Length: 155
Image (cartoon, rainbow, N blue to C red; front, side, top):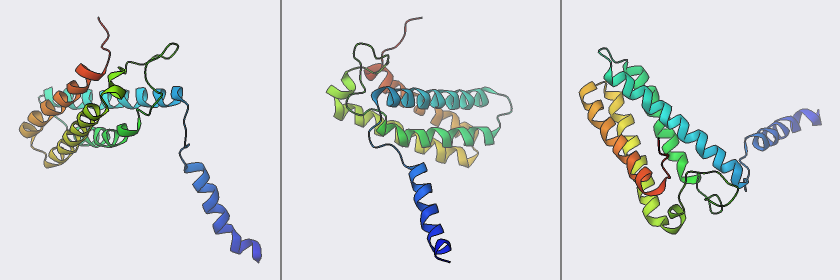
């Protein structure tokens, strides 16, 4: 009978251990996380733009993609810890200015998160014309970080 009483506690402990985020991820791990996250943001934004260019946009695709961007925008604040910037042997498009101009970078991140939230709310309205305007503003907020804090590849 004692083992039955302990089972919920043991199960909770196991679930907590499995769901816990490592306290100190290696710089390579966090870089991989942020690259994957921003790729997902880019894919979701492409879905939105493709739908908004369509003659018959599917609002549910826009809404799902908008929620994905909003959720990633909330997470991106933790994707740039100290020590995860550019240095020999580490491949990243993040500029050193992210850490040397931390306040400006945080302001840009906050602006992106606010625009992502606004767009997600707008997407729920189903108003395609308003979504097109909001998508443009969202894209501009992405560009703010790209211009100042990201090494852009020349094509």
